[in-house]
Amino acid sequence: MKEITLEATVENIGVVTDFVEEFLDGIACPLKAKMQLNIAIDELFGNIAHYAYQGRAGKATVQVEVMENPRTVCITFIDSGVPYNPLETADPDITLSAEDRSIGGLGIFMVKKNMDDMQYSYCEGRNRLKIIKCI
Image (cartoon, rainbow, N blue to C red):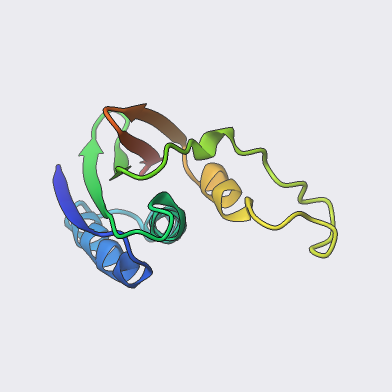
């Protein structure tokens, strides 16, 4: 497992993406899975940066690892911000036009659809969101 801890800012999304991509390159991750994981990183780390600390500074840790049987990539996002389980967010009604839909929720919906599993827990004052992608 590899891990990085940094300020939870929008400017650091690229740092996290580069960190995970370097790991994925080392395990010969297929391009499609890499692209789906990059979209998830952008959405999830961006959400931490925008909402977790409610305008205060805060750190986030990102862990990445590969598991075997089946071969999967697991990325865990950890922050000490306000408790928030994105898996409890109702999926947007994508049958409605963009004008008729409520704002928000589409990014998490896309992550849910592109990952094979997602797990959330809140323990000892920390949010932990793990995304799992079969490769």
